Length: 111
Image (tube, rainbow, N blue to C red; front, top):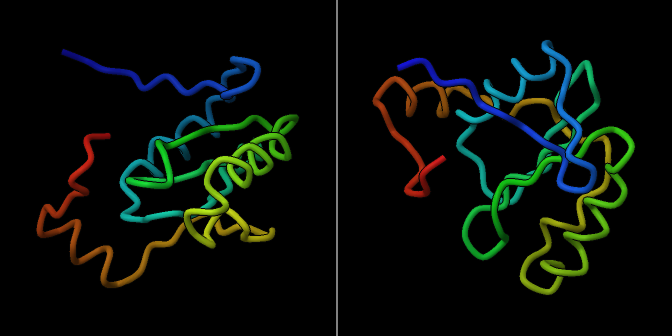
C-alpha cells in the first residue's frame, strides 16, 4: 500500500512545497538526537528531539522563531541542544551514519 508522509507546521498547519517535502522525507532517516535541521529550499526548520527532548517538530519559514522559543521554554532546562544558534545544518550524514543505515540500524523510536 503506498504511503505519503504529511508534514505540517506546528503553529499554522502549513504544508511544504514538493521540493521541501522530499527533503523532509530524506531527513526522516537521519540518526540524530537533539538537533535542528534546515529543510531547503523552503526554509522549514525541523527539530529532532527524541526521548526527553520531545518529539520531532516542524516549523514553516514564518514560524521558525516560534519553534525555537517554544523548545527553549519547554526543553531548555533538560539539555543544551535547544539553545543552539543558527545557521543550522541541512544534514548530519557521515560515514558512520551511512554504515549504520546500510546495516539497517534504526532509532528505537518509531518514526
